[in-house]
Image (cartoon, rainbow over the protein chains, first blue to last red):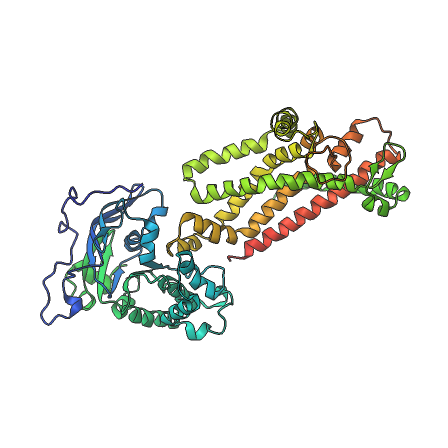
Length: 286
Length: 297
């Protein structure tokens, strides 16, 4: 199902036309975000993803730093969600999907023969576009994943801790056994974040987490993302440029399956090097 | 503006379509009418009390007795045991089709299920009588009769597997993909997702499928008439010969019982009872199904 190239035979086209790695010289007076990502948590090397005959992601190479928020922006259909879902192998469920190149998580190949996707997903959590709580109580939504993964500790404490980290505890502490469906959309999305962090992952992938939410709920999630980056590496896919500018440390701009530019967020939004980035962030297309 | 000719044609089409629609409605009303009037004549001679609570069914032999419970018991013995066969196999098939099978496997497996549903029921009955009883049940359980409820239950079970599998598969596939993805993203295996998320979420649809299959098993005639025998028997022993409501109706219909006699009227009383049981099962199934549709709106 998944075609893989070994790193040895992989063509080194990391800097070929249309693809830009992060090997940009550090800027003067640079803070951490401006540095080249030396030891990335996630590294894509020349990743190409197809669905059947359709090319969704074309030889993308990028390195995602630890405990920062990395945003992937771009117009609809640019391949940003596909790339995100490749990281925790959620694309495996699409039978026609094929991927070449290599995708490394802490140096090990995500698509390697020894990688168990189920185990991988305990270390790389995910939050989806539309809140998708289970039709269970609030408590069981958070406890379920941890229990099924053999959590041995005090489950009530874990649920409280996770809900606190997701900035939801105060709103739900008196109705933990009510159905999760009784919560508002924004609360449901924070519940989904709580559910993901209850497994103590290293990385949180967020696939347009605010696209179904109103501005107030969005602001709460954005504040939360800012807090989460002290513990987790966050990769955020968004079609909302303001959101990327507000919450991310680094931004990758994708267009038509290609990574056009990837740099510190303030540079992308103030001094983009590529004309297409410039056009997109100034609203000339997309 | 329509011309006169067009208008006449439209009216004609309207009337023809209405007439076709009325055929099935009038047939149903006619059946209910016949069942009710003939049963009424029967209940004027036998009290409903004796009929529904009597434990001996012997309308054709002296001394006559009209307690329908042995037939009801035989019917539920066969239908209930059939569900014991059909639920595990049908549900496992549905989970396989919706959660595990690739689209190609699914494409191959679905027509096979439909073939199973298309086998004439008399073939199933013959198969039970000529193969399952002599070559499977009797070597394993020597006390088994030539006619027995178990062989009928096994083939009726196989017969209703497609109903359970196909409708449960639909219910499982109606569970939103986002729910499955949410579960997979929490580091769970396919089996955990199926058993803990998808099947519970589709449970009302699955229950409805089981109830519809039960209605079919209760109404099944040929297979049970052939395999289970013609002995009204108030028993829970599946190895004994029994008689179901449907096989009794076959027995009397095929015999030379004159119309208008009380023996003749018994089949309408039994038929009405059967009709009410399957109607109730279908109504409950529909109600459960409707509730299930509302869950994920």
